[in-house]
Length: 507
Image (cartoon, rainbow, N blue to C red; front, side):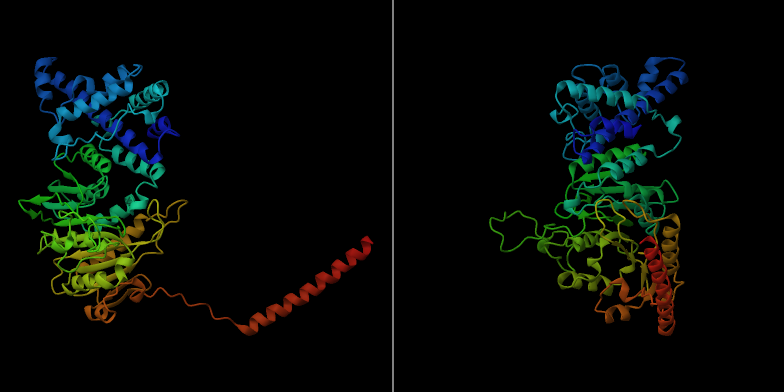
């Protein structure tokens, strides 16, 4: 049904924008269906007393004005101004729930979406499209009793990204994290009950939600920040749709303007996970030679949170800026960081090499895991996962895993299978629990390197330096090959003689 709803906009707007319209309508339908079911339950509880039911509804998650309900919009689906009615409904819903559906500076989650936009066609075509959209969504039952705990919303989001938004954000180095990679990262950084979990570049919050689901308890808190306004809005909706009403999702640039703070200090977390933009250019570092630089420009050299004391990454490569931020926002005695990075992070020199060396000398780096190529929508770049652990204790070794050959080939993207994830996770936890000794753990897959060994490699973390994946070529038997050539030549002479006979017969 979601696929059919997408057909409404096919050929009219850019495919990467489908998700904004579809997920906004999905959110509206969901909160409307939930409230409608709860109202019926209150009526039954209070024997049809509408006043008591109405009072009880004021305590619900969302206060939904009558004109903001999906049923109201469906009743007016054939109105000439149905696009305007949808926009008014969203605005009124936002106003009625400003504490939930707005950022701390007052920006609402629906501010960048307009169903009355001329982008949807002329007045007549737009009306017809929105009528069809409302008809399609009316067929979807999103009441809690019908869903029975199924992650319909999360599945719908991943479906939309996979089918329509593969190019979104590609130029900015932003790549949607596939579900299997999110699951792997969440399992590698599995949080304990009571944990604070953060994703400083949270996108739609899919990774953050996966990290929460790995906790063996409902006792945890989720925090995120996202720079893109439209994506931030989807993240907020995604949290509510998954039942994480108390999640804190901020809108803003994590490096230039971190919003997750306690007083004047950065908030600390037990677990920080992220898939930051790969090698982001102009991430925050300024060039002393830049002209007309504003005096208020952010300069990491003088960062008031002192996140870059190990060194400032180059202006054109922001990977270690995000990693530095993540490390500095974990609790010093127990924090864990899991981050997806391009392979250049493992071996590039200059300032990046110095930062990498310092983190290893601090005994923060725990594991380097190479992933298969072509896992991410929009790029074939092979990536790696780095695990930093501030509770390594006396274990100064580093685990290297080369999982680049462990996947299921797909038409557009390769896939990490459940068995591939389990293989990586079990190896990591064996290392984490001190069960693995230095040296080869599993041939062509995993290796434990000592600090001295990594230092001897100039703190270069390029995985082939540690995990030997060289495949020896089969030794060629020259005599056997020569004999086979002679036999083939003899057969060829016989065939040529036979062909000559046929040709003479034809003449």
